Amino acid sequence: MGQKWTERSIIDTLRKKELLKKIKDETGAKPGTKEMMNHYTVHLNWLMASLSPEDLQEAKETADEWNSQGVPDDVKVEIVRKKGNDMIRHFSSEMWNCTGMRVFILSAWKDGESKVQVARHDYNQEFGSAESFMKSYNWKVIEPEWDAYAASVFKGNVDENPVAQKKGRQDNMYTLEIGDDGYPVIPEYVSMDLDIKKAIVQAFLTWHYRKCCGDPKVSIPWKRQEEGEEHVFEFTGWWDNDSQDIVLATNHPDEEAIGIKVKEAWPSWAIHRWIIFW
Image (cartoon, rainbow, N blue to C red):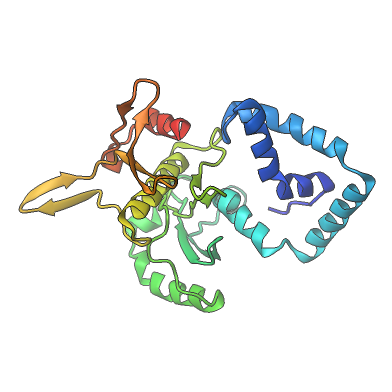
């Protein structure tokens, strides 16, 4: 929060995808890995050094404009996707540590597909060891009014089936970017905590499940009851854009299928392994 834009941060923001692709093509490093992070700063320095005076002046003018007038909507979408949760968590931490105030936050924004997303943020249990507001009180009485407000100000319907619902610290604002090849892109994850990684896994699985079902709004049936018996959902395949069909997930190099069962049972080592594999 309160970021002051500079020529370097402008170039970093506007040409990040170009840099990531160049590094991946040249080194094989995947976004989110330590290897990519090690290469990224070096490549950004090279890019800055290669810019013409005209390019640097244009970046300076853009920085001045963003500092005085705010960032464009498409950049806002990227910022909320990558940093929105961390910014709200930081705000909650500061309010408690500096003022002793407790906060419960409702947020709303428009994602890259122009869908209205809403989220709830409750860090009271994490900061100061108080009881969680969401776990202890009926906060849902507020939700319909907030959803209606969000739909009104953003002039759209609230997405009833968000791509991911991140619950560990009581917020749910993680969505995945869709790359040029039509697949969801795994973000930089090295510095992320376990809760966010779980949200990434759920978002990734949800996208593939909806694609395979041909229904963009269906929810994954993690558990269901049929004839008195409990059935557990198991994810063993992916949607392939080239063949337009479902292919089995494999664990290279031994080609054994990866079975991803009910989300409550996801161990931390498995979550890390799945993200690296994807």
